[in-house]
Length: 166
Image (cartoon, rainbow, N blue to C red):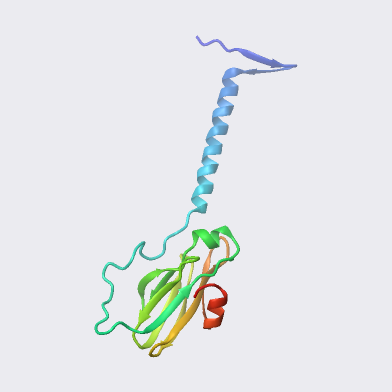
C-alpha cells in the first residue's frame, strides 16, 4: 500500500499525490491551450500549392504585354502579412500567389483578361485590357484580421514604383 507523505504549510496540509495530480492537470491544460493557439495561427491555402501542372501554352511569339501583381510591405498585422497569401488567377487559371516582396509578372497576349485574388473568405476580381507593349499594375493585399478578405486595386506605374514594386 502506498504511503502518502503530508506536506504542511501552517494549518493546511496537502498530500503529494494530490499535488502531483494538480501539476499533471495544469500541464495538460497548458499543452491543450498551446495546440489550440497554434491551430488558430495557421494559414489556409487557397488554390494549388504549386504552379499549374498543365499550364496553357501560348503559341507563336512571346507576348509583350504584362500584368504585374505586387504586395507592398507595411501592411499592418501579422496574420494579414505573413499567414495570408491570396491566390492570383487569370481567367480562372492559377498563376501564383500574392507575397510581400515577390512581385508576380504575367505575360499575356493582347485582349481583355480577368484578374482575381482569392482567400479562404472571399474573392475580388478586376478586368484589364492589355494592348501591345502595355503593362498593367495591380496592388494586392488583404484586409481584416480573423477573416482576411483580398484586395486588388489597379494602380499607375508611378504608384507601383513608389511602393517598391518596380
